[in-house]
Image 1 (cartoon, rainbow, N blue to C red):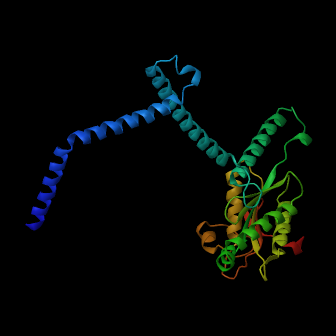
Image 2 (image 1 turned 90 degrees about the vertical axis):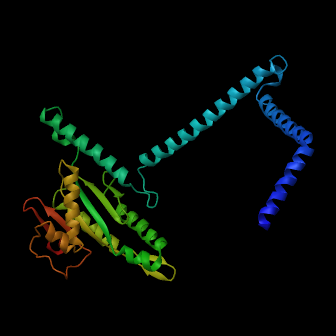
Image 3 (image 1 turned 30 degrees about the vertical axis):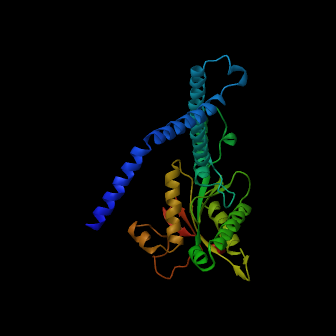
Length: 302
């Protein structure tokens, strides 16, 4: 009850004040509105060149200024959209991996698409007799490289150490290639794809083994420690369907990385061995198109 009485007194006092000073309150309101109009007019006039201010009616000045303001707003909005579009297109069009400086997945896919298109075009031209065998576009093999236990390095020493490993691996693979026609791309966290041109089913595994050994020899100084890493590698011979090549290289990689469950689930045929738990990582497996089996590369047999 006391609270109600208190509120009632305050309301009555406010109403009494409003009645007693109504003329002053109205005057203050008009003063504020006039000030706002003056500020708006000043801003609008600022949009009109000084030489035109006297000859143009006030209404016209306001209209021109308002139109200019709207145009500027539209221009700014368009600029923002254009900037966003350019950024999006730049990201989509980027072909280089920022961390390692080699091709990224988009760059790899773009290269592969152009390469396959050129091969198919020249195959048709060769069939028609328009070009000779020597001038035809070269075919290629695909090598899938996956680092072993990189997660343990990240978990133990941090992602900076892992990034240093990835950078070193990228440089090492590039150094193991034969020339400008062979490329390497980072298509995932620790997965690389290598395209080696004009290789047969027996030459590509040799190149893969050279890459594997070079990666195994990497030593990274990190603080007071030396870090190293190994890689498991799968190799696929040329096929007109790039998806099939990647699938075969990836399956060969399953086997090289001891992915026993995947091997059994997909019914992969492994030459000379039955999948077992004591398989070692850090090896090269390749698909032999003659036997249609996945074979372990053995340098000692060469």
